[in-house]
Length: 363
DNA sequence: AACCCGTGGCT
DNA sequence: TAGCCAAGGGT
Image (cartoon, rainbow, N blue to C red; front, side):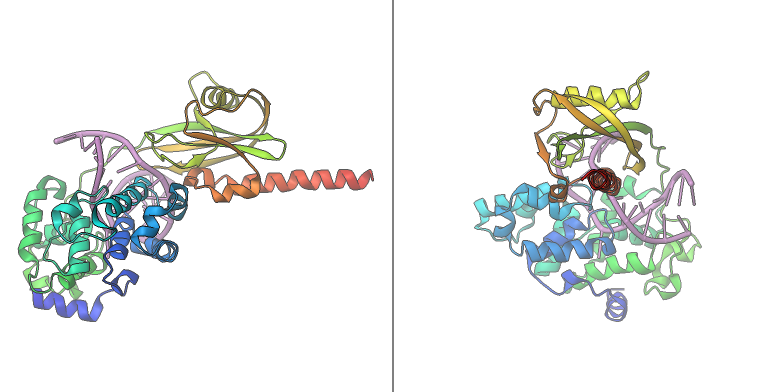
């Protein structure tokens, strides 16, 4: 089985940027980016990151803001914060080098069993098993597992360790993931191209389309959110989210959940008072957008607002700033806020146009 | 152990 | 379209 998979990999394995190196740092960065994220999404982020922060000391010394900006749009931002923190730990405890023993690697924030196995096998050719989404699916089909994989993790880890090639663990683990990603796919598996077809219990029982078993996800609740784009002269108010919150460390336009019996406009006035401590008034409605998070979806209504009074203070956020529109792109924003940028810039351009035509009419 | 955490592609 | 899924980890 190891030989047939090896032959298949030599002919059909994917050519990926992080496979051109054995630098454990580069492989670590790729593994963390790839957590719950598709290869095609990761590639440009990986290239940009390695260009900007090519070594562990570069990452450790980088401001958090820069790290989050490089991660902006990838999601699960705690991965970036943990990567940053782990680099600083490695500077303190390992002289800026990446450790080679499993226990030390596993102790780093943001690295669990699968990521540790991925790094140690890819960078140092160590025989450490992995169990990512691809491998779970391949193994669940191989043994025709009659339970959802999540209920059988100890068994699946044992299987991953059993099948692992002790002589060429690097190539084997990569091959197993590629097999899952391109042949043993979640939908419409290409069993005709699979090197393990003869040994696959799911295929032999005709269950390859039904396995692995899945557990239906509960439907996601929907929330109504309102945010304020507060203008004071030429500056816009933004705040940085609390470290304990979702999207921690990212910047946003202040706002929050619309309470029962409250209009969206009343909501932003209240939220800005609570979070920032200033009084504002609504000028106009800018846009309404939809956005889906992992566990809920939102409708987000954005208002252009005018600053009235009070001093902006970080009451329910980490930091508050007044910035010019052109400076917005320097700050990392979550996806839902980014959807507002085109509307905002269009509105600002329209305002400028109105001013220009006014002044040309009355020179 | 169950829940939290983002986003984009695909069907 | 709405749901599913992706190189999971932390708590």
